[in-house]
Image (cartoon, rainbow, N blue to C red; front, top):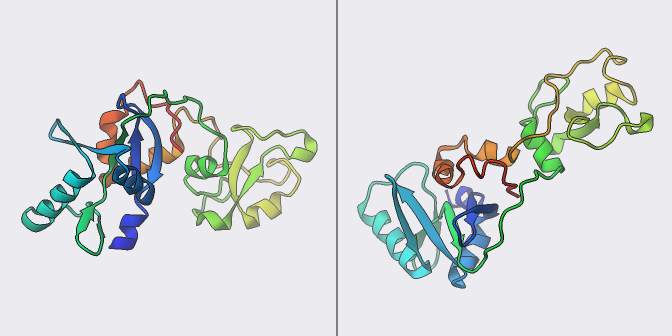
Length: 209
């Protein structure tokens, strides 16, 4: 479905083929159309690169004559269907990626897999809150080891107390992730398996936004 295609993610490499971040499909096509990036594919240990026009041709050929994989996505335009790329390479961007994983709501939700760390139930992001294990009113800081996902009911139950004072316990101790939690979740999906080629041990700690 096209709606699913537009919500897909695209891994972005710098000119040296190092992963620098993740972008959305619309941004990826914009970079391709402006000749600021190229599509990179890796199939059966064979690499190929395509500019926008050649990617359109490849997409049309594959759509017409080759068997479609269930994890391929296409976006329909007025004139043709174009396959959603999984990886693009910026042709002129040579900065190196940063290694620190940013402490933000999205990464905390991804680290905890959208699961309340008190009751263990998984919720949609909009139904979760961020809880300070040691409340801020008692000197608790906003750190990886003091922040967890919590559902509204558990957060209200705990209030301004420590978990033991509220007779609650954590599903697992919160830790600072060594690599992007969002990346970890993406790699579980088959359609993003091609990313692994560009995420060897030297790049596992790259921050992917």
